[in-house]
Length: 95
Image 1 (spheres, one colour):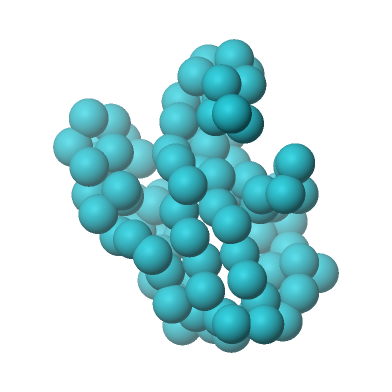
Image 2 (cartoon, helix red, strand yellow):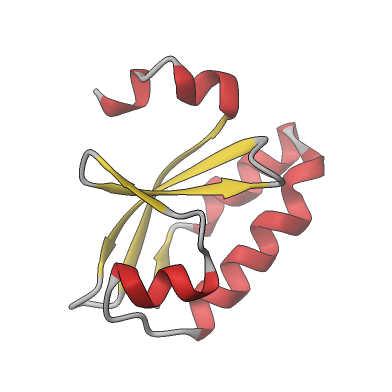
């Protein structure tokens, strides 16, 4: 899958360095795998959820949330944002 953009991961890990290992692992797995559906994706990431048109991943034991838009047909993953669990719960990211 082609991930757009890794810069968001790098920026987030500067502020939250404890997320680096988990986000780097996520990045490497997704980059090497061509998923055709959410069901296939959930084989690697069982906690991934479809929420309001986005696929949300729990990162670092649910401490952080990685919000993505995935176009399985084009093999593209757009990182919409990475939030702390508290920020995610405010639902402002949906706007």
